Length: 255
Image (cartoon, rainbow, N blue to C red; front, top):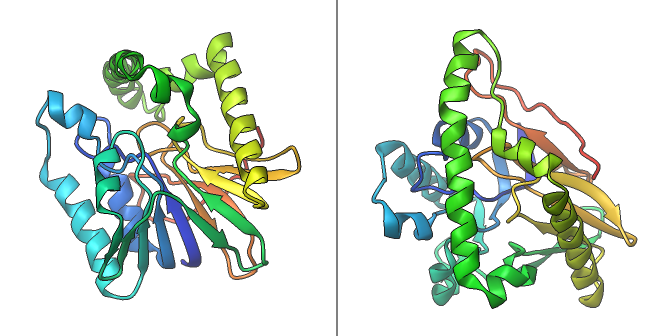
């Protein structure tokens, strides 16, 4: 499939929970004029605690660089887990690192592209608490492994315990709502028509305060991305891995 632009975020390369095979499949089977990496591509927080970097994670990086060499404009907008890369803002061949970007869609809309951690008060004011929360999140992801081993044995599909908890716990639902509203307000202040972000691992397409809100999701739980066609329509897709024919499955999500 050929797309004008695609956005992916929260790959968390360097952790055991990254679906590197799914990311690689997505990159191999689709072409884009422009590809945004919307933060937390490499999980430096986790790599400082545990050295985990298999060949499959190298393959993803190499594929991104090959796409750039062949003409795809790759724009990396660092997040909180790969914030060290923000020190290297600039152009490196066809790979550009920016703290955020203002993207003009094919239909003329101005869309602010940012990871979103900048508006997360826990990240900005209590980083130690963010690290503690990250450890709790990793514990939930580890619990996913035996659960999904059993589900696969029974012929059932992937199910995310952490996503289930986020959707059911009142405080988590409230946080997501506040985050979405904050991003919409921020886009409005910057005279943008919409915002494209990641950070909270909750894929969504919504209109908030008259602002188009798009969240890429992640490649840990959701395995999702945003793609724009040549008319400026932006769709949220979930990439279905481990199948004989890999085809984009558009799925519009409304929060």
